[in-house]
Length: 211
Image (cartoon, rainbow, N blue to C red; front, side, top):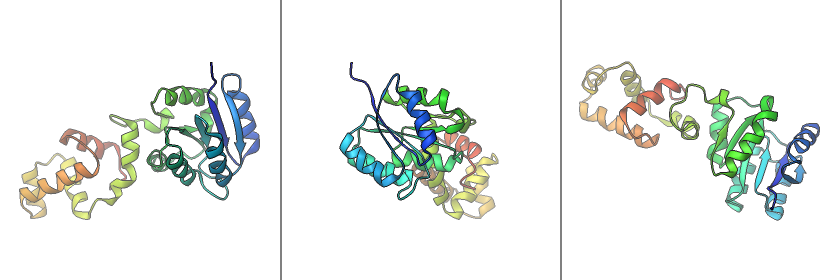
């Protein structure tokens, strides 16, 4: 049976060696690279099943490397292995095309689980990053930064809806028509790829990136 081919990319060579030793009993590590440029070039030539990479790397950061690799080899899965616990950075990673996001502090137990999950076509993120999220954590991550693009008026409407006000009450507070409130509400739902009013409120409660 053909073994899964994996490339590792991190400028911390000791960590790369440790991860390689962790994975090699089960997977074939076909290359290790210290910077983003070398990684992209090697990925095209080696065509691995999975790339495990860091966010911060010399010459080309992991996020940009991820975007380039997905354009060149759409079937290759990418998993970030990083110290970066910022959920918005995780959102950027998934928007760039990643299938997994694992913190280095829990690499030994979670990286193998992440690899198994993405090989099945799924997604994986270190559980501590997804606490409090509703629904698909990947969709939540993907929304995080784009939510900052909401207009000032949309944010005002969302805040008032979050406070439990009806659309008519929101209209009275903002001195606009209920029809205008509805327009802002459904524009936000389309922008955030949210299907229902309940999901919009749940999103507002669990993510403050829009505020």
